[in-house]
Image 1 (tube, rainbow over the protein chains, first blue to last red):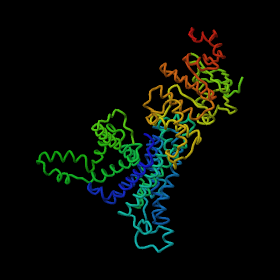
Image 2: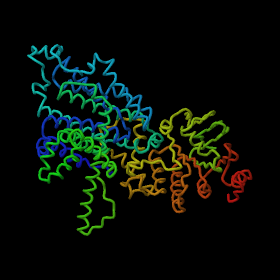
Image 3: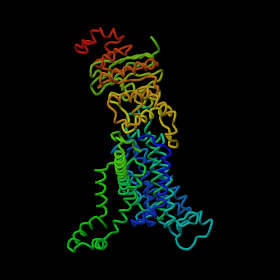
Image 4: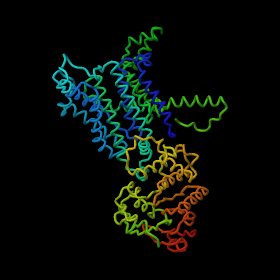
Length: 381
Length: 253
């Protein structure tokens, strides 16, 4: 972990930007290049990148980040209902409100560390989830979820022009935010989010967070008050979650309480670990893979499987279809679970560590071929 | 007698029924190396813990250059200029050696908290140079890009010392800085500590190794069962019968 040069970071940033913007092209062969799924890749990528700023840098494992996702969504939908269908204020409100909420939850939860911190955040998130269903119904519209209606005031929009027929759509200065424009809006947000995360990782602040993760005792005897550092990291990652939540509302202006449930909090933990905790691109990778599995594998059914294995003899084919059938459709969670176990056991550093190992294997092999000794440790990038 | 930099007065520390420290009075002179010796369980580490704010005494105060340390948190105490080397090295195992030393340099420059996420580590040339300078001083330059967790125990201790020295503390507290070190490493550490002394840094050192104590100390306090039983110049302490008794026939003094 030597201090990386700014030049390498600009290369990384350029590659990341190109890869994100070209997703509709290079994801087409695996059947993932349709706007709905691409939007999810970008949105959950933001969620996971933000989560990683807390978990990856400080080691504090929050089990309640879905609460911020939910707050972001509700805030965005309210902005659509009350102010305007323009997405910029919605995104702004979603992010800021989630940030304020994170100050509150973080202030209390960060009094403890380790498992107690995780439980406190989980408790807060579940509390928010249940409140959204019950007492807060006037704000959240309870089980139905918060949605647009024809009676919404939409003060700014209606002051500019008379309301049209039917429900309006979310837009950015006239561009409808569904389909590919929606994806590109999310993609730009993702690129900005990634850039900020990269800057944090490379800043003195990021190094302090890593030092807190490494040895908190030493930090306090070194003259640092660790609490504000942790709180700032917590709030930043809460704002990322709020941004992701508001983007969910941008692409589909509807907010439901289930977005705040603990399973959603758990999902972002899975994404981060799967891709690689504390790495820059890992969380994005993990988010993509989980969303891909969720959408593609769950769409498989026995019919499709019969088609795939049609070449096999009848008896064997039936068995193969019966077995693989367990892993697709409703059973995609089984595939995810198995993949997750394999990663955690064999590649604790996630997919990024896997890529790194493959790379160093090839580097070493080519060095050996040129007669260079390789017993010195290869410097990590 | 020179200026008193650290003044421990009437400190009492109780753990349940056990009186770990009773009525400790200790004055540390500026620029001197003050050793605290004593058998295991005498309360030496407890005394250091009281000084750095890890423990709050039941009674008594600790003053550092006119500031009361009792009641302050460890990070506040560090910020007024007191640094500590631990018995088991407290470093950042996952960071590189250079980063390990850069972190305390930031604490010295930026205080207890600064939201410094806009800048880049790469632009912090001055902090980096300071850290590299200290590493060179302690002979750790070659390994500076290695992860600190991979160091040998002796090197970890030297790294921790570097982390304290980069802050230019007014007072350095060392808890058995040579425990578990080879003779060669021990001698090297003695050399380093002697060099620091020439720069006028005040040190309090807890040590079992009498070779280290008598090579470095200007003054020795002997602690036994939570009390100071003897105090004075090394030669006076060496001949004190009470001290020899406390060490249970430790005639090797």
